[in-house]
Structures are given as C-alpha cells and as structure tokens.
Length: 417
Image (cartoon, rainbow, N blue to C red; front, side):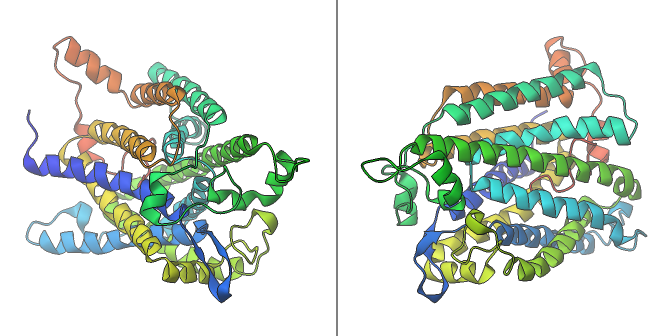
C-alpha cells in the first residue's frame, strides 16, 4: 500500500531531525572560541551542558502531549488521558540511567567521529537482549541471538576502522562553515585538548622540537571514545529494562513518558552543574579551569561565537521533533519502518560527515555498518518480513507494532538520546 503524504512527511521528519540531532552536537564540539575572563580560544567541550539541552528538548514533549490531548478532547483516548493514574516517580530510575548514559555519550562524541558514534550505539541490542533474559525472564529466538553475534562482529569492524583511519585536518569544509580553524596540536582535531596528559604519553617530544605520533594520539583518543559509547549502551540497556518492567504496564502515552523523563533529567542535571563547576578533572577537562563542567565558560563562548547557539538550538529542537516523529511513524506505519529509517539516519550522518570533512573515508566502515544493519534486522525480525515478501505470502502480522507505541525491550522510550 502506498504511503500517504502525511506518512511521507513523518518519515522525512524522523530522518532529517534524527540526523540533525547527532550532527548539530558534533558541530558544536568543532567550534573554538574565547571563554570568560579573556581566556584563550579553546574548543567547545561542554558535554554535560549539552546533555541538559537534550533533556530540555525531551521536556518539551510534555507540551506536545497536552496540545494533542486538548485537540483530541472530543475523541477521548485512554492512552492520552492526562488523568490516567500512574506515579511519575516511576520514571525517576530510567531518567537517571538516561542522564548518565547521555552524558557519557556526549563526552565520547568529543573523542570520535559522528558516524562511529551513531553506529556504535547499535551495541544497545547486545546488552538489552542479555538483560531481558536475565532480569525479565525472556527467551530470545535463534534469530535474535544471531543478531547479537552479528552486532558484536559489526562493532569490532567499526572499531577497527577507527583504529586504521587517518585524520586529515587540512582545509576542512567545517572550518569554512565555522569560520575558524582548529587550534591546539597540529594534525589533530581541536577536541584533543581533552587529553593533554594522554597526548604527552602517546606522543613524546622529538629531538627537533614538537611532538611525534599525532596519528597514534588520534587512534588512542578514538578508541577511548568508542569504548565510552559502548559503556553508555550498557546503561541505556538498563534504562530499557527498567522501562519494560515498571513503566510499560501503565500504558503511559509515549510523549508523556519522554517528557516526564526529560523533566527529571533536566532538573537533576541542571542542579549537578553547580558542583561540577568546582570538581577538578585535571588534564581530562575541556575547559580552562580544569573542572568537570564550566557552564559559565560555555555561555561566554556562545556569546563570542553565536553559531554555537545555533548548533545547540538545533540539538534541542531536533530531539523533540525526532521523538514525536518516531512515535508517529510507529503508530502510522510500523516499528519495522521506524527501525529502517533509524538505520538510514546513520547513512545520512556518515555521508554528511565525509562531505564536511569531519572524518576520512575508510571502506571498513561500510562493511561494519552493513554487518550492524544485518544484526539489527535479525534481532528485530525484519528477515521474516523480507522472506514473506519474497515468497509472495502474506506479511506477518504487525498489529503489535502499532499498538505498543512504547516498543519492546529493544526500543527505549526516548531512543534519540
């Protein structure tokens, strides 16, 4: 059956906003600007502040929920009824997991490429599957175990591509867009200021002056970023299991669920910015004061380079629209369609990152992405649909995909975080 114009719009909205969400965060990381007190130019490395912005975007989903509820007031829908009894504190444990996992991923995004960041998030399938067996008593089908194995293989290939890739910082299109060139260590992205001590370890001084081993440093940093992303997926998987065990049974509308978790995350992480301002992080800090986070420095950088504000605004607004579009795609089409569109999002991010010069092409990334895609398809049962189509039989029933908007153990309520 052909898609309607509205369905095409939703699919396009999900693809575009999902891509903008990752690319805008990486774009902000690529900027350099002076901070407070006349400090020298330095890269915009404020992962915890970026996470606060993301939760603000999720929080806005609550407004969208109540707008939709008011619009549908003449046609009562129990799933969208704000008077439906449930304890909002049920969302606190998943929100804490979301807050921790998101913060780690924003730190990791400073260390690796946008495409690897997106691809490696596929590791969530591995841990979600294992945790659902351990804590929810689920039995995984053979195809799901094969999907997990394929995902592990894909992660190894993507990680190998990062180890072998060469970073080229000369005349990048991103420098034309941002209006500045990278600062700090020549031959390395400006984000390497996060690892000054690690740089000294990997790149010892040469007799002629300067340092050697810039490529080794880039490789080390990418590897650490990749490991952090995979570590974050363990926390995201715990979030999914908690949502499955305690939240889904209350049949809370997805937009309300996303907004409530966003509210908790926004309030808690905003308060944590205060102690983070004083907690020393040594050479692993990305701000001049050497603390875990310096929100004041971030605001000063935004004031001196307004394009950073544009990148942050794109990140905040895209997360809200992406969640709305993803939920609507599941309702109007199917969860399988949503999974396919999310895979296409990785392709868009990778293609644009190459075009902007944010990363170098490596053929292993293509292989890694295809293996990850196969793993995701196997885990989510897409192969059954394809086999059914090939045999010209009736496609397997997808009614569960439409009815359960919050998804199964493989889909987080706010899967764009």
